[in-house]
Length: 115
Length: 275
Image (cartoon, rainbow over all chains, first blue to last red; front, side, top):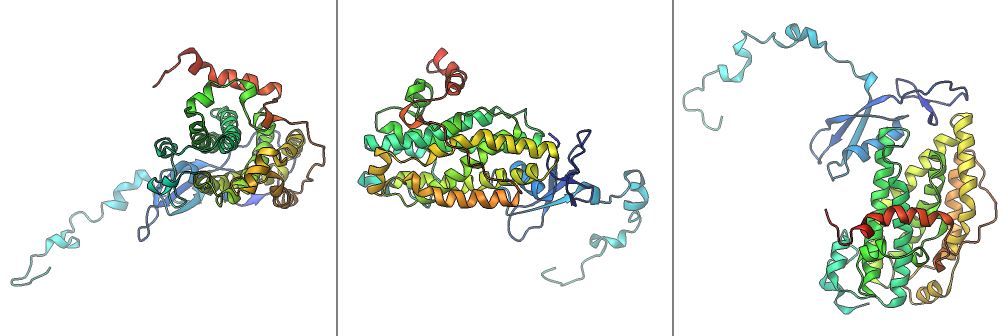
């Protein structure tokens, strides 16, 4: 089955042309679930869907069947720009040797209550 | 309807489970049992058909979607059959696994073969719209148990309806091939629409008591909802005449026997088996 409307990588819907020689895989979507009011959406996993509307429905089936969520976001995986895992050093280790960035570095002043 | 209903969890506000009905001790009349049997059989046979798709749908995500819809239907079937069984001191398993083909009361639509994906969507479109119209009225049944089962089921069927409409739109407006298949699926399905809306002595009598919903009363809103979905999908609602039907009287097509053989073989081969 080639599916109905096909979807660009940006999740936009384009009407089928009627000339699908080969089967196009559905694009990948990242799913974010908010488990209760007041909490933020948390990444729950990913799924395939032909377009954004179906992605939300598939997300409901795959990630909220046991009362996990009150809200769902889906984002085309291709829209996510990630940091380079190989460049972990320069991105995340810059705080090393800068103890003053950590609140624990400071000593508590004498007589201060409720800190 | 028994007076002790309020002592159970069977109220419209609670999410009703078949286990709650099993322990409720509520004994419906033979007529109410017969009516619950029809609705339970519709859902049970559809559940069996849908479960075939698991591992065979176009994508893994669709395996899950159709599998979930099948499980919802199985849940509705369990509740209706448990309740129906109380009328004759039978369990849901007695009714599901140890009745012969002429004893099933499901309409022909539900036993129709899966065909291709579009054909299954066409059957699902009709089934979910019919069940939605029915359950959304059955919530007001004078029989509290039927009302409570319907109240739980209608929310789930609402989603089944959405699922089938979404696919009707995508297949209908997709490629030439998907559109051709959707049209074929609808054409194969339509002869079985008529039977769903036929009244008979049982439904007429129970509707007068406010227990059942008269099937013919659902037709107008069913047609309107279907017409709206088809218009959006740029498709035409078929006008083919209905097939003869007779499922409510136990007259079935050749498809049900094969379905039951597969569904019942384990329970009949190993009576009392559990896992």
